[in-house]
Image 1 (cartoon, rainbow, N blue to C red):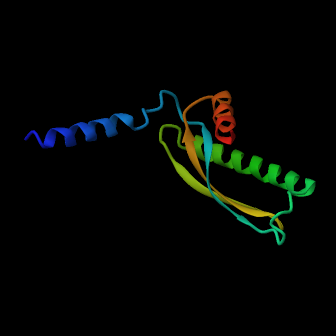
Image 2 (image 1 turned 135 degrees about the horizontal axis):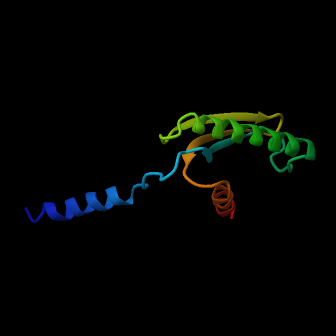
Image 3 (image 1 turned 30 degrees about the vertical axis):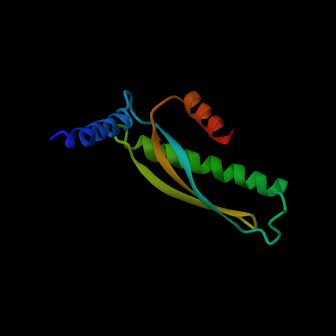
Length: 115
């Protein structure tokens, strides 16, 4: 019986470490990077201004679609994969997950993740 006690404690700690339920409806989506495929022939080439503009546009569209998907399921934690391609630069794969928080908190999380 004493041998099972450490195992039970580990299970209890793992259960308590899981994310607490959201105290408000999920309405924002948070992206988790799954991987990018580099499409550049010269892999040392930096992103061009045109590609950067397209990247920003597609990322904004994906963020809008992600938040729209999450808001359709306000009381549930959901996830969905997204991908898009910036011609001659990269294919981006991301997973959209429900985010419990404000726009400001999401922005802070993204800023923290990019550091």
